[in-house]
Length: 424
Figure (tube, rainbow, N blue to C red):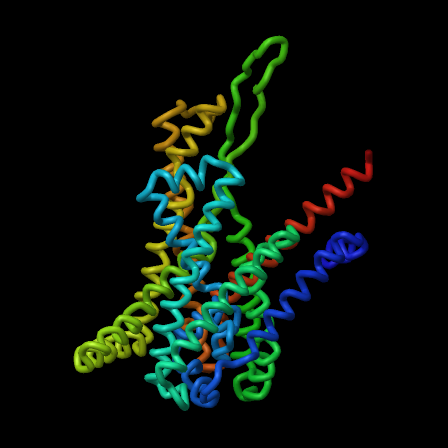
């Protein structure tokens, strides 16, 4: 990996792209350290230490939420808007045609709609989150002017990050939104290492050694599953058009083990945050009812067994759901048949759809269980080691590994193109 990066650095065009991306990420980290006015930072740090859901939400904000910065929402509203738009493709055929059948122009228009939807979602998320934090005593002065101002700032900050993400994506070295989240996670590593060293206890040296070995095993497993795929052989019949013959070749259809990526975890976190936001809304009309809902939610989420089991089940369910949304066996079968392709031993049409559906369900089951395991990994490591400061952030680890692999693949593709061009 280092050799490929050094080779890319020697090419001026790629080096300039890497410099632009680095500059944009530095700008993001600067904004992530500019806090909103009137925040009690000591109380904020205490809250994030004790609340796992806010900690997970901080991961997807790119590390901007724990400072309650001007970009505290990160790219979360845009991710939510994208998910909502993809779900709407199941309801509105026009959106489905736009996303799947109209090529690059259709995808660009679809992404533009997602950006429009980001604005109201960002305003709603910031309003709900600021009210939730205010009830925890985060703000020293909280009034109508403060909340309106902070909602506008947070929404504008989120849209600014979406724009920065688009600028990064245009460099064609990694996905902009993913790299913003990646930068936030990596930026917190020095502090986490410092905290682990400060809390070092020589009497549990074996525990630390076992934790290190477990971390390496988990990283290897994440890489293995992220890169894992089932190759389904596909053949194309020979066709004669005029004096030319087309087809007659064999290729394969890749079915990834982790087809859904980290989206199921985002779904699960969003759903688990909803009861707390709902309690805040109800409290505006009935303080007693809102208080009771908040008590039930707090009891359930403070119980590690209930919390871990619920989180695991939601991730598994959403993995199947999101895979069904993004990978339609019927559509794949239809496209293969129209292109003259077929799976050896399987008749085109409905039999191909049934075959792909069954195969995808088996592969997705393994990927779903793995994602669920990754999601509850911090709870498992803390339970096994008995040390609260020792926890493997499974979600963060999955994001870091996935983004690093995808970025290196794009750098490789650019190197291959330039090597090919240099031969002619």
